[in-house]
Length: 115
Image (cartoon, rainbow, N blue to C red):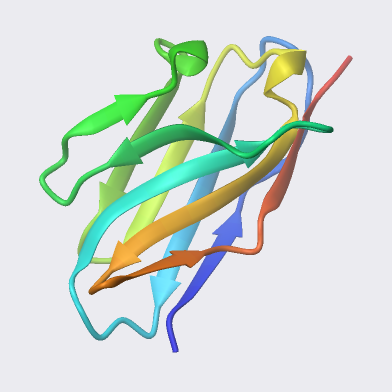
């Protein structure tokens, strides 16, 4: 059974930084793309950033230049470094991974940006 376990969320002041981690376990097949999504309060879930197994990345326009996605293929782990955080970044952040022929989701971690 594949599991994605996220960590690193919390409360931070505007302008601050956080680093999210997501570790995949129970891997049987190759991990393809990994991504971070978020669901702001009262809104739909949206893609934040994605990284392919090749290292190619893409970002939502709202986070370009502030967030960086990276991965450690040996550890089946994906990271999201979030800098210059804004109140609009407040959301539950979800890890997503395409493993073999299936997509998997983490349980979500809360990020709150507030003074």
